[in-house]
Amino acid sequence: MKTADNVEQIRDIVRFWRKEGLTIGFVPTMGYLHEGHQSLIRRAASENDRIVVSVFVNKMQFGPAEDFASYPRDFQRDCEKCQEAGADLVFHPTDEEMYQPDFSSFVDMTGLTEGLCGRSRPIHFRGVCTVVTKLFHIVSPDRAYFGQKDAQQLAVITRMARDLNMGIEIVGCPIVREADGLAKSSRNTYLNEEERKAALILSRSLTEARQKIEAGERSVSVIETYIKERIAEEKLARLDYASVVSWPDLKEKEVIDGPVLTAIAVYIGKTRLIDNFIISEV
Ligand code: PAF
Image (cartoon, rainbow, N blue to C red):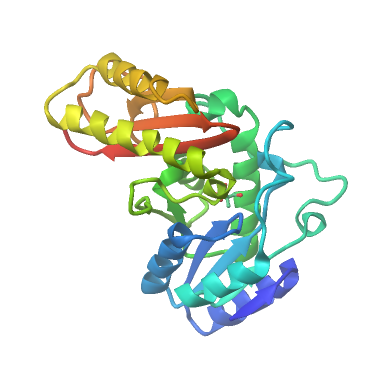
């Protein structure tokens, strides 16, 4: 496995692969890889000839009061995880390599980015769309892999790739969970022992909500209220949002009469965690 911190190195390697007629799968990450990321790399490796992973903590998608500075970083460990999962090339650029001092071009999206996480993180998706567009231009993959844990991000990137004719297939992959149900996240490392236990309220409340829908409940407000009440029972938890919206166009609904995303964001202490489930048929 090769690593490169420079855009031109990546382009040269990818050009060489293309000349050989090889297909390229791409997994963009912010590093501190866990089994969730590795499942994306493995899926990419099963569907493409060569796999590129990027490891870049993208300052542009963090708000001023968010955790950019403290976001966990360990490039050596990331390389081991990439290699183990079948990556061929890891792109690990510096901030300066990605953003020149007079950088002034952005990719923005209306609609899909405004609800859910976009409400409390107003600049987040502009940062995500901009960096993912840059990475797509640098790597020029055939397919790119994103986890369903960031369901809104998956919907946004899929729409962006379509709207801007990027010619890249966006592949959504299932959430990977710990044995007790907590969705894997690099941010889980922020949790102390007590918070780690409290964090189970996310997956538990969602599992119960899913059971209600599967048992026939069709009212969005009943489901949202149920989740809010369950989360309020956990002392260390503070709800950001609990929403049931149409999938994949993320529109508010009153009745569950088609595919829906049920998504939550909850602070456990100072750590903001997200989780969700999608019901594709009712
Ligand atoms: O999902 C992430 O880790 C990031 O938002 C991404 C897609 C790598 C862009 O920085």
